[in-house]
Image (cartoon, rainbow, N blue to C red; front, top):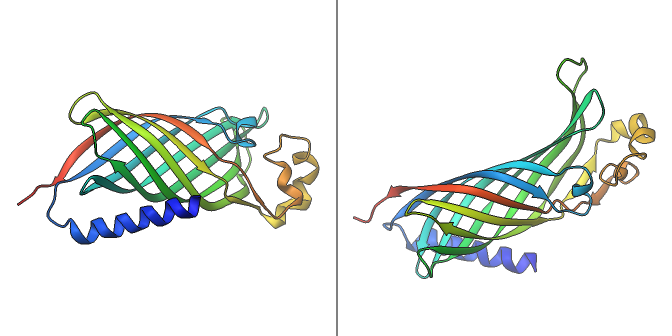
Length: 213
């Protein structure tokens, strides 16, 4: 299913880039809160922060939106240590341009991320990279416009990337990590797919970038 959605998004994005050269284009900025709903992820993190920027290109009855998104989740791993999860994704969305107030969309993207530990404030120590993530995901959501440029956005991001733990850390931290939640229990498996699904509620603003001649 992800491959089909990805192929459709890429096709329409290329078509829009070729055929809609002199049309009205907008740049979007969104930011807000995200909630972890992934099977392993929600055992470690609750709420996080997210931000994104996209460029919208009208293509007939749909709107193509290539762009970037960023997510941050944090949690106190111990009294002296904080766990940080950083996620970046790059992809494109297809908006169904059928209403000036409600704007549903679907999309596909490539995600990269990292999970690392760092000392909390007033504690000494060095940061430790635990694992990295790479994989394809899909998104779906709805924009609700409060005015011509200001809107609220509800988005679901669904991705199960491959998680890879630094091999040099496996022997050093295996005993400690195996006693924690399932997100860390991949220590004995070099590559495993982890659910990093999220739901986000954001506020957005769009600016005109290019006008019709």
